[in-house]
Image (cartoon, rainbow, N blue to C red; front, side, top):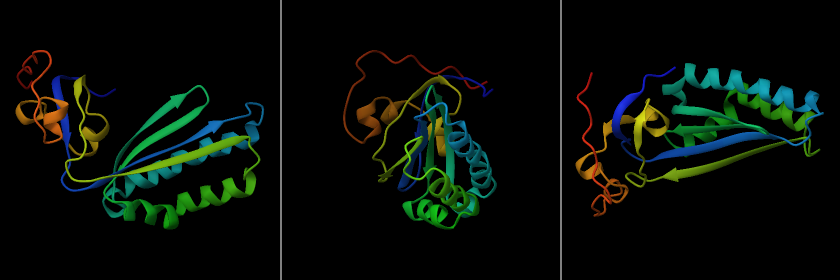
Length: 172
């Protein structure tokens, strides 16, 4: 388990980046022979991404389970990197072809993805008493103080805190 870092932090990434949300939904629980291969195809793709992060432009990601499926939130250096992996990544191409051939449009298993292209400085986030997570794990993990104290300030606007912000504890 990741170490909790006491205090308020935010993330910083230089330049634009992409947030990619991808997942699957089990529509028919009894069709295990359809959805289990989709679930099993995820791990080799994730391993391929983490082994080749720099080369592929993959920054980091998180994995989330729900009662009907799995969602991954990923951070990429650019849409071009993401699209290149989608079209040329060996593990992804195999999984994509297998899904189309074995599941197709039959309705037993749903898949989805969403891509968000984020311009420099057009994001904000805060992590309070959390391990490095999400965008702060994909980029830099920095104190949420001063110009980074409020959501408005993190977006380059003005805004005083609605409630007093406690100071971060000293670094351990």
